[in-house]
Length: 310
Image (cartoon, rainbow, N blue to C red; front, side):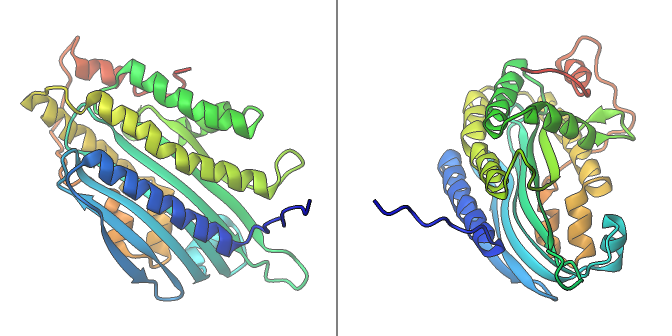
């Protein structure tokens, strides 16, 4: 029996398989919405590379959602070089980024990103620097504890397949990353977040790439379940107002703290693709105070770091 030829992991292969994941997710989300379809825009980046931006709007359940793929390369701007504390200039980055804003206040916002980054060493004979990053997190307008446990249990299963204490490490990382410092609250109930994963004695490059794809493919079954649990529940006008209030916090995080937004803007990325994460409508009510004992107050009490959902 002839052994199958081992596939060598290259940046081209990573980009190709990320595109496949984008295709799978878009097809699944269109079926889940049942009304609207994604509109695709192909774009080129000045300086090298481009991407496929896909947006769905005014659907049966998705008011606005984006599932974007990018593959960009070229020269790193000085601001990014300084932030990364590197001297290298030539870079390559590819990934899939998703944000979905439902029209229903009992259906959560969700975000996912999987990405690969590579820089030339700038020195003869020295290999390129490269790493994987990504994660998935949930931002419910109302925190339902059963849904939170389901969400985290599914992410833990993906991390357990990767091995070690990955879930605990990546959950703590998410709690710290998705934190709105000026509000003293987390953006949602967290999830997992990781960055600069590189090959070690414990995990090969193939292991990390397999994990990255597993995170990407966990998105659709997890979100499908959460949408279907809540999409047919009745809601009030007051709950919709609360949804717009929670969306404002989401916007604040993305514009003030989000590293992906900053990277896209600093590397001359496509503005519409970068800012597709913003909600279609949000409200900033002055000095809003949740009523004592209300579901809104309960949700605020659960927007904290360190809650163990599983």
